[in-house]
Length: 296
Image (cartoon, rainbow, N blue to C red):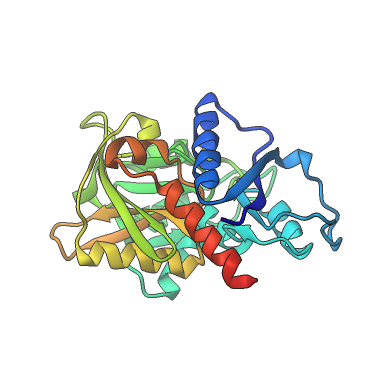
């Protein structure tokens, strides 16, 4: 089997210990598919805008970061990234995600962008009050960028909304309708190469917690997905142009009511491996290999 050499790009600053096991899974899975990685942090691969990648250049770059500007610069130099810079950009910004999903006709919770707040300015809670008149209380307030559920908040009234907005400050954020039927639970579907390969239902650690992120202490169990859930997950990944993704789906009052909440361009795979007994990295690597060979 022909061996292809590539780069694994990871963030220079955010590298908790648990990520080391993830990188090991990616590298070992790559070897089985004939893909050999050299791992670099983003600051170890400075790239001049408009430059051409020097030979011998990698056959591919597995970009396990959210540094969109570096990703775009690398693509401009002639490198093939998985996922692409544009796909990462759309997935990393929750407002961009909502816009793209709505454009594709994919159901999402009703979303209103919060007014932009320039540095040195103070957010006016009136924006939340106006949004709540349309979306109702309680109201989800999210920073446009964030991971592990940390930047997602639930405001039960204007006083809580004001406190949350003061905390968010000048960071871009949005208001979203709270899907009460999915309080503390959701569905994570892993999609690779246009196929849903596995799914797990996640449940919050307590009845008081509305978020179901594993990073917030949630538990998970593998389960089969319905044709509707499969279609939503696959369509969402396709709408954002993602080669692979973790698609989060909120559950409605009945089986015909589902909402794509978020789409992750570099999902943390260990919880999926532990819960579903499937290693999505294997599917990712064979997908990358097929794309490389198709492009030859």
